[in-house]
Length: 520
Image 1 (cartoon, rainbow, N blue to C red):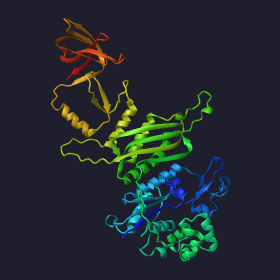
Image 2: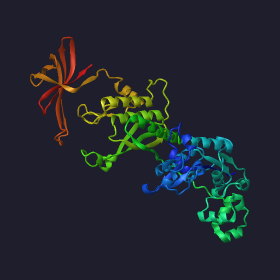
Image 3: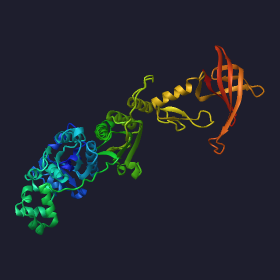
């Protein structure tokens, strides 16, 4: 038997505007009179309001000045990005309950729940789980279950909470609902009002032929909706892979502590949407819209468009979905790269990927948790910096490049499991290691028959007992600034405490000697 479940968000624009408010203040705001303004800043008018605001006299189309006369009214400006994010969050929260989910209208989605009883139980239990999942992403919803999709949508608009309509009882259950749940046009609503038709049952009782003669096929369609007999095919929607949350502040903030509260709320919503899809974030993009007032400072040049935004991209070695860890990483990054102006809008976008599933081996050495390790690495970057003079990262795992040039390596993201396996493979049979001096130590070398016989560097001076070499190398001859040419020697020097094994090289371009490292 086919069954459909519709999830409807009452006062969608109001809830979308308040969705990212802190958990402590959001319920209070939802119980307060709230109106949403839209239009040009010079002529803002009421676009939507909740029931409490309507009871106090707020009407759609009022100007901002008229709405402000209402005592205790909370006015918010409409932000389309907030509504798009709320609709996407609604899709994310419901996609885990059915493979067929339709993005029906703004603020409503419809699910085909046929055959889901074994996984989620009876329809009433499933509807409650869907309502709880929507509440996790900041949306209070009505959920209705019916034998056809449009009957479920009409019932969800008119009910409060959860409503399960038995098969065959659609007309009886919809009869008491107001006519507004059918979404008639203003002209149709005015005609029905003049006829005294105010409920779905009144419209369902009208004779079909005279109704068609006066209102055409659209009137007949409304009557079929009121009777709950419209049957149509659900059009499944593929949820977009873009996960984006944003928040616009009423007053721009300058300190990172105030910004942390906003980041925490945005990350909580992003991670909940990721978990609803069984995904994790492999990359987080942060965008801050800055409040630039260059006209107030005569010492500064006029601001460029790119100066009004501040962007950072954080890439993770392993997928993450923990909000606290992500927030700490973003805070450490902002502490090292502070925005140059007050922040008026925060936007976070997560690049989703599949979750990481690993199983530790019985004889594999223990490694730190990737999330805690990444926070530790971020703290190290804040202390030592991100890159050295050659543009290499200062924190991570060294990786040799495919080149004959000495000390030619790069630093890549740290991966505990891979690094342990690589180290075991490379150094298991190694007896001698070379400890590199960075930078190489300048030395004075005396040669006899083009072979080192004594070496002096730092506070040490010693005779060379044995020398192997030279090993000549050169490269990048086509680049005048990066070409290199050198001769290497391995020497055994007589020290006061014993024999020391060193790596020497002579830079043929500079004609200078250096001590590059010490053999253990």
